[in-house]
Length: 100
Image (cartoon, rainbow, N blue to C red):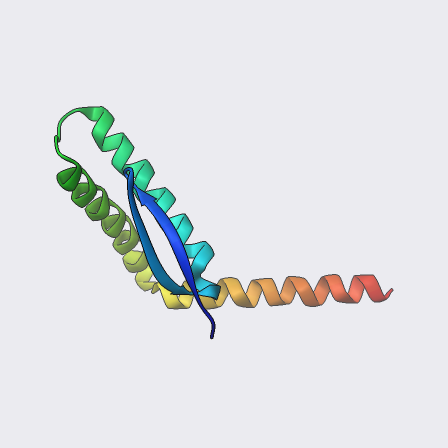
């Protein structure tokens, strides 16, 4: 497993962190989602202060994640595994089509 240094910008604050290379894309998506939630909270004008805005955005993201992971007792790991299985099935089907 290779580790990669990634520069992140969260609400105009720069961070450099180490992450497994295979998790970089997911990390960048998480930062994008956090920034979008933060921007929405900031634009609402109800909460002032970068730290409070980021905390509220993080709470919103975690809350959304928990709703997804608890819905129909489907854990995130199971969900990822099902997607991987579907992806594998699609790749096998495409491979068979290419052979014919």
